[in-house]
Amino acid sequence: MADNTRAWMEELLAEMEERRKAVEAGGGLERVQKQHQAGKLTARERIHHLLDQGSFVELMPFAEHLETGLMEGVEAPADGVITGYGTIAGRKVCVFSQDFTVLGGSLGKMHGRKIAALMDLAAKIGAPLIGLNDSAGARIQEGVDSLSGYGEVFYRNAAYSGVIPQISAILGPCAGGAVYSPAMTDFVLMSRGNSYMFITGPEVIKSVTREEVSFEDLGGSEVHTTRSGVAHLEAQGDQEVLELIKRLLSYLPQSAKETPPWLDTGDPKDRPTAELLDLVHPDPKRPYSMHKVIEILLDRGEFLEVHPNFARNIIVGFGRLGGHSVGIVANNPRFMAGALDINASDKAARFIRTCDCFNVPILTLVDVTGFLPGVAQEHAGIIRHGAKMLYAYAEASVPKITLVTRKAYGGAYLAMNSRDMGADIVLAWPTSAVAVMGAEGAANIVYRKEIQSSPDPSATRAAKIAEYKKAFDNPYVAAGRGYIDDVINPSDTRRLLIQHLELLSTKTQSKPFRKHGNIPL
Ligand code: HXC
Image (cartoon, rainbow, N blue to C red):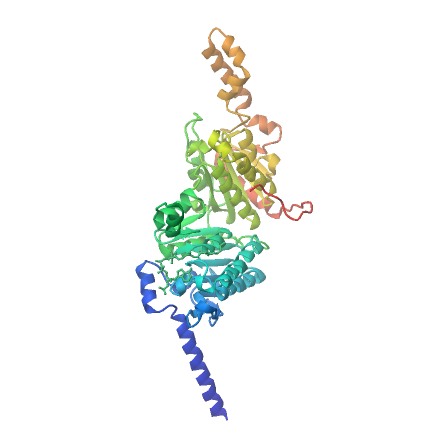
């Protein structure tokens, strides 16, 4: 009996292994070779590179596609998606990886069900969800069932937004639902040269609008990281994208219930930042590098810039101060003089809300003259878009620290997390000027009659500008009213920022009941 039992078990195990091998072979050797020739890893290789060695545990490998009319007799191992969990730097993550060698990674009902089940699991245990997307979108052969599969995924993208971090890597040609789901997640990363995102591909566009466009020009990583803003980051090839995901995760908590992990960076908290004394030039029209300011302030100078090539007039990204994860929002005086336009407002608002969801304190570095004037901006809705930024800052309940480095004028002063918009601590360098507008513009308006009627208008104008500068173009009027907590020596900036950040770590903020706010979109 014992022998029979063992033999029976061995037979069953052999069958199980055989089935597993067939699943692991994906779409077969030829398609795997094609995937490699395109410079891409396979779905399983990607998981292997992403997770800590040997940590991956697969779920539902034996899932099978629906036997609808057109799918009868079709082989679709694992239904074209590998799902499971593992660890990155010892922290739990849930991951799905679409297999382009199986029906182009297209999403059928079971494929969608597998991803949805994984999302439920990630939300229940409180772990980030990482999607490695390489998919032709809805599986044509399954018709409405494949659309239903996408519905299950989209529904959860929204339901778990702000609950757990959701990160999407785009690692192949992604169309239709395969781009809408990533677009609903917190971060989209693309691999340069072999990943594309579009709702409809070049063929369909040609037939409908007669426009001829290549894959790259329609939806390559350059387009989406510079022009559309759909993707936050790009890197060269699958492996670099996977490394970027790991870096990104290090700044984020497991879920909204936790704070981001503290990391011993070895950079002294009281390191003087005397290099900052030589950055800001007395001529307000001479730009300086805000990236340099950020680098000097942050632990080991490490900054993971998000959206680095989109709306470059504003800089956003993650770094550490005294080992604590912080989100940076900074004007970029080197690009459009740091003026806020539609794209900059969208970029900053989105980042502020992402930080707020996941308990990442926000440090705002201010050098801004205003919102960008112009008919095109007004007609495209700068009011609506700029309002997002005001809303996002006001709504964010994480610790918020603001440092004014030079100019903080008008509406943009308010938009860049001023005291009245809810900043917990506001600091300013002695180089800063907080006012309704710059001295030249102000003198022209306030003293126009005096200047015009004077025997020497240009001398009077210069005198009035100097007068205005002395009175308003400095941090002390704002400090005198309590809008600024302190005017500080740039050399002490890092030490003070860390001190304030640690003070604010116990910040709590209660809010009146509401279902949810109604941010202008
Ligand atoms: C089923 C598909 C498929 C699809 C491709 N395949 N698209 N199978 N459903 N949607 C299969 C091909 O038959 C082929 O099978 C394999 O996947 C690889 O496809 P190729 O075309 O050979 O690859 P490539 O030349 O690299 O082109 C990739 C592609 C192209 C750009 C993604 O296949 C394409 O344009 N597909 C259609 C995209 C699309 O329109 N999807 C529907 C979106 S609608 P074999 O057997 O040869 O390997 C949607 C609605 C969701 O998603 C709701 C949104 C709100």
